[in-house]
Length: 115
Ligand code: SF4
Image (cartoon, rainbow, N blue to C red; front, side, top):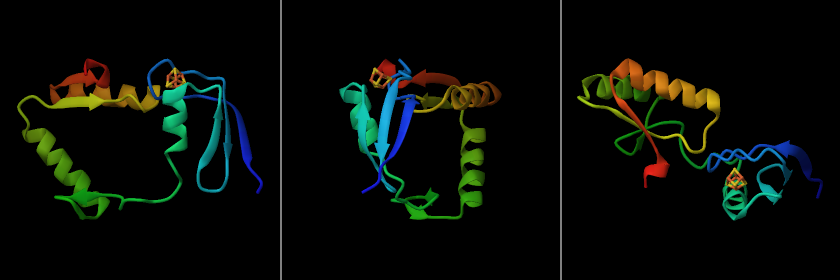
């Protein structure tokens, strides 16, 4: 089996952003994450390119993405104090967008580290 090797990959799991990870992957999943810690290995090795879920859900049922976005916007707009939470597994650019969203909504931001 031929594996794709990606050197100097960045792990975004915990926030340390280790950028010296070497990933070995087949066509579907990462099979090795050299130099990643135990958390990073678990994160890399347990994600696949398979589509395990539909693109969007409403009340637990598959729904068109546009409908899900419209409902999410409506719910966020109605919220008294929306909480934008998480952000541990996303890029700096995505974190910037979540902070902008919280500011636009008049909400608050928290990360998983508060656990
Ligand atoms: S989870 Fe481990 S490998 Fe990933 S950024 Fe944090 S310390 Fe680095």
